[in-house]
Amino acid sequence: MPANELILLLSLEQQIVFKRPRQHCKALKECIDRNYVSVHFPKTGTEVGFKLFLPQCDLLSGNFETEEGAVTLSGGLILDFIKVKCTVQLDLATCTGGGYLTAIEEKEYSMIMGEAEGELNMV
Image (cartoon, rainbow, N blue to C red):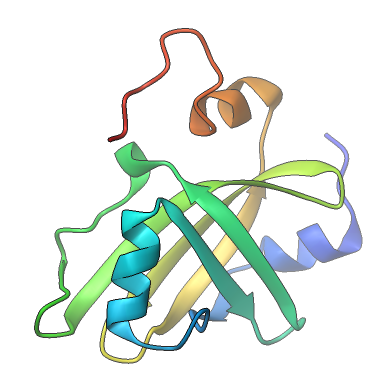
């Protein structure tokens, strides 16, 4: 599978920050409700946005009302012409955590993006 230096670097778990539209739990919840989240990898200065794949997300381990706990988010995107899955865990109090990218095959990418036969209903 083709890979480039940036994707290899981002395949190692590292610090991530949720900061768009602002670094706040309420803004994160709004993005999750829209099924699209952007995170920043400070080590490389890379920001990626991805469509959530809800079957691989854990939203129940965090409480958005009290801003306690953490959530795990996973979804797909294309970075430098390579299909990848982004997996992050974010602390709701700080909107920071850890995350990494994984290069994936077309079949998995299509499933994540809802393009495969038997598309999962994620509403």
